[in-house]
Each structure stands twice: as C-alpha cells, then as structure tokens.
Length: 83
Image (tube, rainbow, N blue to C red):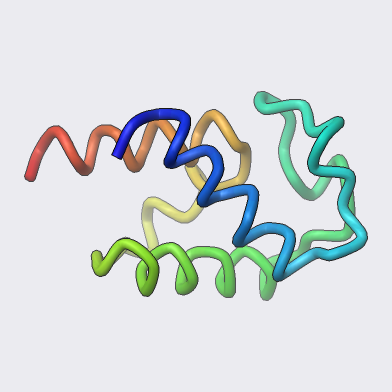
C-alpha cells in the first residue's frame, strides 16, 4: 500500500473508534490522545483493527508508534518493506 492509502486506512479506522474526532484537522505528528478522546483501550482497538484490515500481527511493543498518524504510517511502511 502507498503512504496515502495507509493514511486513509488509519483515518477510516480512527473514525470508527473515535467518531467525535476531527480527522480533517488532525495534526499527524501530535498524539491522538492529545487531540481527541483516545485512551489505552482505543489504542488497543486501533491496533487490532489495523491487524485485521492488513492481515498482520502488530507486537504490543509497537503500539506506542501507533499513537500518531505519522508514527502509524511510518511503522506500517517499515513492516511492508521488511515483508
């Protein structure tokens, strides 16, 4: 998937988890939890949704990287490159 496709996927999944979030005004480098109601349970739900959508396994140690849009996309691009 391209960077734009990964970003669109992440935004779509975030919209399902946090429908109140302003994803159009999302700062890609700022933590989700600092921009809208996004707690540790939401982070887990986001990681599991990514796993299901991409048919991959994301180790718990990588969850911190999923806390920002750019971190998430970067992590997923690295995973693709390593595959």
